Image 1 (cartoon, rainbow, N blue to C red):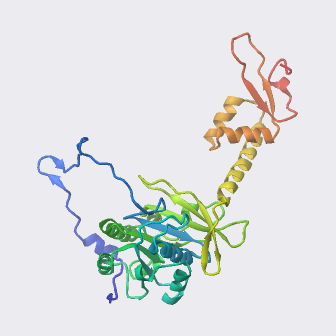
Image 2: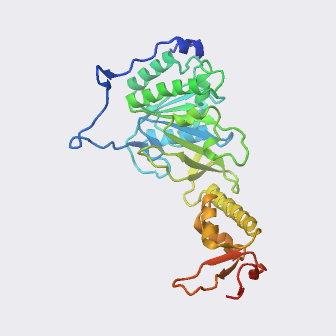
Length: 362
């Protein structure tokens, strides 16, 4: 049993706590780390699900309400306990999974999804008692459990439920950093991966995908990965998962789509990421507006337009595409007898080139 915690974060107590002593060498300052080139060995990341779930790391799973985040996690747990990699269905070494939850779903309901997706019951553990909090005592017991049961993946559904006695305000960065430092330490020491579910806030359309999760930005900064589940904007029932954060040795993974059919998760490998297409479409529209506005002031050399466009955040190809769609008028500057191609100028259709060149038909 896990003792119920009454601990709350108190900035005054933190201020009174002794600061850790600096690692120093008397008379030489800080104790530094050096490596010998001949004996240094590169770090080779290992994965539970490459590249989304790196071993020994904490990964955020941000999700809109109703996207089936618990269902996806139960399905991934089922595959991994049975020796199969989610999405690709390639064989792998089966692992033990611990599912911590505090939501509205019961152990039996979550396990029903787990069973429907072919899970191995011998490697499946759940804990839903409200006594567990991610304070030092709770995390100590959790680490003991991970070691004793050889747990390699912990699903936390949802993260903030386990912080309720520690953080009255989840947007406070200091306690967020303190909790995540301890959680990352457990992951590193045990080589266990934490998949921490977090709900998304209702943001405006311009909010970056990586900033949709609730709470302090330190939660994102302190995780080594961040997955985001969103409803497909055009396909009812389809969920899109995008990888929003890589790490030093781990690049972002490709987006993938899935839908729920009955109790099972079915992946849709042929479906592309609709948010990337909409982002590109929006960028192109913005660029056309920017270019049309700029040319409203007159004609400009193409090189000047391209440079200003790049400074504004548009790629060269996007600027050329915008010019083509706007049917921009283009003229070579009259030759001055010098070698080389004369500069090209751009203007709106109908522009009076005689205001720029003596010979507008050059």
